[in-house]
Image 1: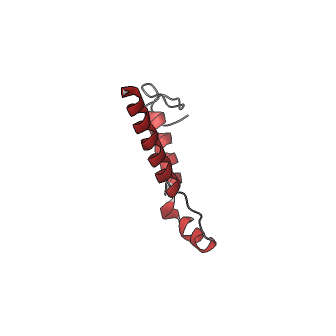
Image 2: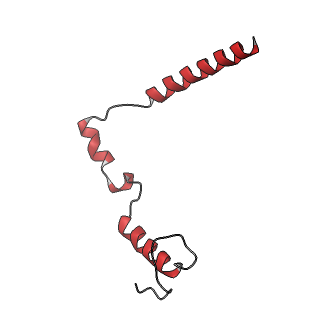
Image 3: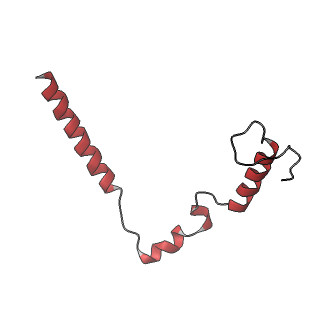
Length: 77
């Protein structure tokens, strides 16, 4: 009896979650794509600056870091 109640609650919660996740899907109209393509909408709005910072960090912290960069800490590879 207890297992059936737990299973029915699980099914109800799963169905509600599935419905809510499907409601989040929508199609993007052609005139809205320009807004989504703006640099402000990117996950990393400054990719060059992030790459330079990652390079500097990996060259300074090569001994203690798990990054792929190697060096002695002077910044030269």
